[in-house]
Image (cartoon, rainbow, N blue to C red; front, top):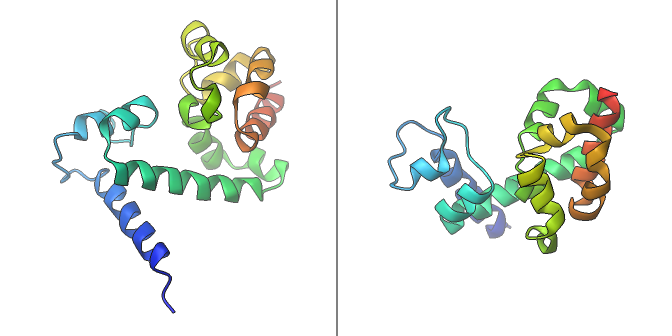
Length: 151
């Protein structure tokens, strides 16, 4: 039998993929695609995108992180493309939902000027105390691996 949930998820992901293209003319494109034609995440996605794009983005992120969770630490460290992709993940996507509006998240975003995982890693060990509280476990593991690699 066909799993219709997978079919619907695929349609949603295809809609998200259309937003990457140059032919996408939806009025919200300015909020969804930045000047480098890369898909924007975080607050601009939440404010500007429709529910299909948000769902598809979350679905793809969860599947990607399930794959990353299955990798050993040395494989993550050795894969520069994967590190670049993970480094671009917005802080608001990696935070536990109940910590998004917390003082700790505000410290990371506004005081330490962290927009993504790369910024957290560049600051080094000083960020780990806050990240242990607010970041989802899979992303915390990646942050720790990357910080230890940079030392």
